[in-house]
Length: 589
Image 1 (cartoon, one colour):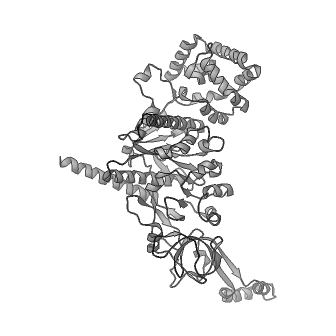
Image 2 (cartoon, rainbow, N blue to C red; image 1 turned 135 degrees about the horizontal axis):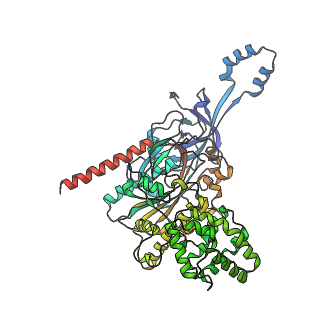
Image 3 (tube, rainbow, N blue to C red; image 1 turned 135 degrees about the vertical axis):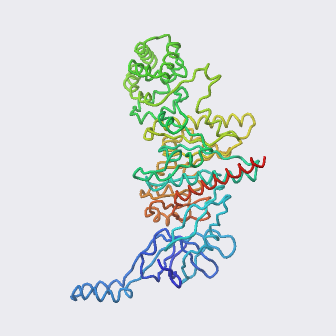
């Protein structure tokens, strides 16, 4: 829009809790989008506000009676075109966010006087209320939404962001992954900058669960077209990451590390979390702990840590396992422990033990429901024997080693062709999270301190931190226990209302893209000032517009997220500068 010579409008009524009503001078109300920042010039303070609603009011009865008259429609239109600016008022509603009178800005606790000027946000205002990028802790995240075009940027404080858990919420296709890649890139830049001036500072490690391979490989648009390189790709920061995938074909094609799952590491709770996705009944799950105990310890079964295989092993699964070298190794180990050569014979024996110990009903449930768990055979699995453990390290142990080591690297887990296999994703994520938590706790018991700061990017977080899963998943324990020990979460989800309330309350910064469900909006805005007013903003956000609130920004603000291609160029330039510096050091001897 064209800049006005004077103010945008004048304050005519309102309150701190309800917001302000402002009459606008511009004849075109379409120039005032919901979510836009404005400044109000009070007598003592300048106020920062966000537009939460817009509207038009006409000289009601006059206009109605005019249109109800017998004058021809053509004459009515001509007359209304001539007088329309005199018989209507255009207004905006504003939620007050902050105030400043030269000192440090603070949350608004008063309101401007009647007929105060509402003006456009200037660069100086952004500096006062949000600060300015310093490429240390403050990094530009995008341009604020304003009436007209914006040429200024809002910085996000990466140091404050990673200190506490934070969330990224929004419907599918709104830009969550673009933002996640940008934030991850800024974290790498922040860590490099900080470690270069403070050799004693803890190094930052990222653990990214990458469901759609858009962190480790390529970012794509909604039609599947490649847009740019992901943050851990070969062209950006692959030197900072170890990249793993359960997709063995992708591992070979793209140079990623294979990640096979050792089912002997699974707990009963792990299986309880994923079994409903396979369609397993509640009755079976009620007995699962008893089934596991029998398969592990009964003298006739003696499967020990291979108890899960006792749930699914029969002639069909044996035939399938015989085609895979890892499957044959597991079968050999089972035969050695049970002294039973035939899978069907072992199945019959297990059913008899279940019936003897738990009764016919439990046995019937075991017989009918365990077939559904055979889907586990569709995933890449492995088994490391006790002898092998002396010389061979599992992929999960290697991942944890890197995350806790001063000389390690960040880790990204790319799902590849398994991107829609929620059970496999949950198994891998829970195993890594549990092993990480156990490692940190064992370090603390030995009197050691975690030497790194770890941020975990967790997509589809409700699978781990929902009301039904929060107490069973190791991510729940990490959320509750690990912040002070140096581990925080980036909780990414399309349905924040499905997260446990305790999880939402632990998020100190939230990035909220478009949401339309009232429950989701309420969850995403929990804890933000003026939440009741900002609820109007969230449903009308455009793609890649995000409402940020919390510790990492001084005041809630809607921004158009930085174009990812531009961000990628910033990351590449940083990488080039570092390589040049290394070459100079080497040349100087």
